[in-house]
Image (tube, rainbow, N blue to C red; front, top):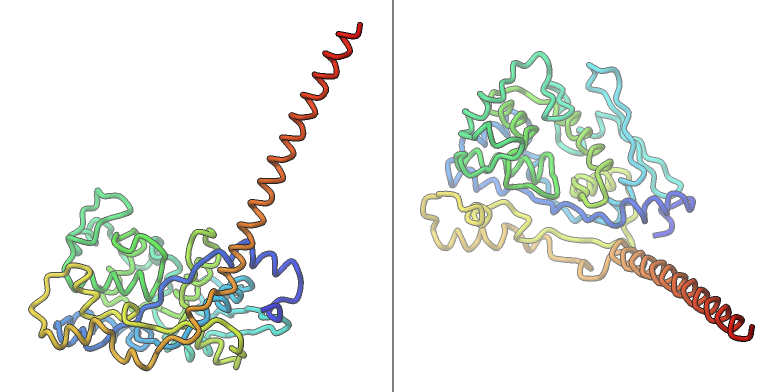
Length: 333
């Protein structure tokens, strides 16, 4: 792991700000789910937005390497109305540069469409009305910036699930519609074509700048980036996708959606996750470098706390000794 750092400052930045952060659980869509449950609108949205391949990305992933890449990740966006950007990250002595064309090739995303940086700030040329959007999705606009997803239709709830787990992943609040979710969802249902490469690049930068309690997303996309640059995965913790990573019938049942009866055989197959055998776990049961670093950090913190406690004990003992000495001197007088 030391080969991925060139100086102590980079290593300390990783240890303090990125090693404690877990990956956001990667998920991918089983396309048969849309067909078997007649989610035709959602299928049409994914086709029109050129997202169908992106939401189905599957591969092994490398959480330690992803955290190291986020440590050095920087983005350069050109002028305000340009969709062009460049991604930079460093692993050891190697500096990697990814332009928008290569990023789109790797991610299967389009670079055409309306530029969204953050969902809560829609483009000025799009006539967005929050109250109208809430009515469209059957949400209560008076619920503030965290609206429960339950009142929405099954298809819209699945759209939101894809949004917060795959397209713009976050580590918490998956069961509520936030203002930026609402903007993006209304754009999708209004056939507003979004420049997803631009949007997801911004979201990657947003994830990097998040607090240490937040997760790091797009781990499967990072695997494709690493492979594009032929980065060596030897001696790096590897994890694989399993049944719970697949968005299928079991996901809908877990969400409590009002679905038509599913044939037991199909339901059992979906619950296991399609093609799970293709992604059997590698050495994922071993503790990761970040796990070990967190243990070392806790040990260091405990040691620091103990040192502070012992210093206070020494100070108290010194005061007691001084008091006893004073009492002894007074008795002699």
